[in-house]
Image 1: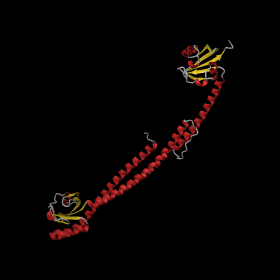
Image 2: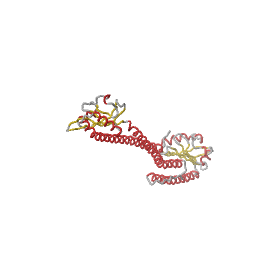
Image 3: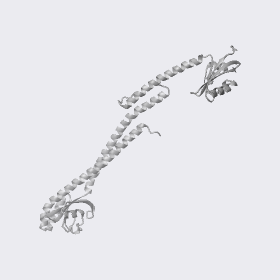
Image 4: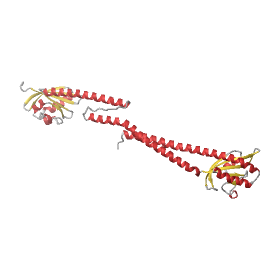
Length: 352
């Protein structure tokens, strides 16, 4: 099935806009997600620093009971999980789990960074909570030395709902953009293809012989210029056709009015043209002549030899023949451009 220019333009526009929309949507989601994680991480760091001020004093006093009470209170208040870790990796207090049941945290990535005096960040699966967690650990520094670590964390699942809602919103926006793109693609494709379809229809109409066909386009661009050129061409073709028709009519009138018989044959001997004078001489209907072989119409033995001699000589030859009981003088001339042979038959019976 042949694809129309409308389908090609529409498909191209829609494909490009859809790919761009999907690409922008994916990129937007990733950027917003990353910004959200960075904002959440900064929030956890601020909470850890704030919690560290109160924890540092109790940690210096080695008041284990007070530390556990404070950490347990900070968790629900901040909506996070707060963990106090000693410099050897031992968990001193945790807002959600019993420290005695927790393994040594000295090997944790964020803890190692905090032990070096830096803020540590990590996102991984927690075997204790059995969920993906986002961790931020800050060192408790006293007199230039790290004396403990405050780690604040939150469940990644807490932001999955928000991210899922973000995906839905971006998806809905992308779908709306695609629908608008379909409407725009339809409009643009029809705007471009409609004049071309008109041109095609007008061309077929002219090819069928109706030179009145015209194309009306009001786009004020190259398509309109093309349509105007097409209309101008149609006018010129009509003028040329009328001129050729007039000349053909004049030529036909001249040929018809000739007293001599006229016969034009092609290289195979088929009749291309003959006039009524020849038809009267040879007694055959002139309308039946075109397309038939000349020997079917003219029963003259010498004609075959005349045709051979004229074609071999390439010029004009003059011969006398008998045609239906009358004597005719035949002048045969070759028209090289048309690969045709023209013969005129002059009745000289009365002269003889």
